Image 1 (cartoon, rainbow over the protein chains, first blue to last red):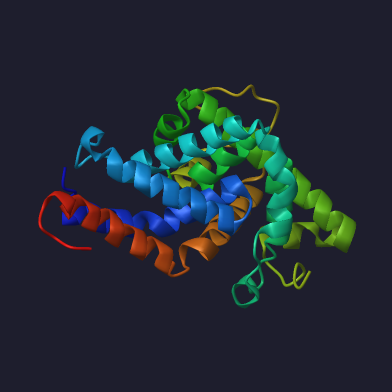
Image 2 (tube, chains in turn cyan, green):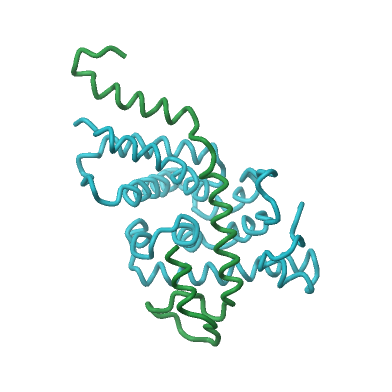
Length: 186
Length: 76
């Protein structure tokens, strides 16, 4: 069946967002982009099952996530294996860092369980609602909220510890709140 | 953003309250830290989102579209 040009355009506009989520799942942008490619091909072939006017972004994210986990299963890999490469490979854009040191955040994200990480990224970074995130992850809304809460608490704790080690306890409040230039140029 | 709305609605949620469906802020997590974390998450995310769409995807969409026309007399 033919895909409407409007739908095609919407897909195109969602690619950056899909790439960002894919990178957070895969740990590096190359594999992330491969995953997005596979997602788009799958989605295109399955548009018959998509109701135009419904949440295209959530639908695409669901396909991408399912594709990621099914690939993991095929490879016989634990999802946690990705954690090790996450902070190492994720590219740093020096021009955009400004006063925010994001490497602490990346490390912290890599250190929490995968289900908490994806919940936090879907809700906290992508801006999905809890209901949408629950739909994408195939679980209850309460489960997502619980994962997000735990992820936030753990990430905040890890970042506090990280900065305390590096800058000393005096810098914690300023660094975490992002008020000063304490966390720069790592 | 929806999670910020939730944050503002649950200011100073201190103490070891059990996680319920209604509780959307992490128990004991300082709202200031939660906001900072939210900002940093979005900044991290925006780094990738703000990148221009790589050519491979533009090419892919072109290919997907043109393969739809295979049953027509359209040539690749």
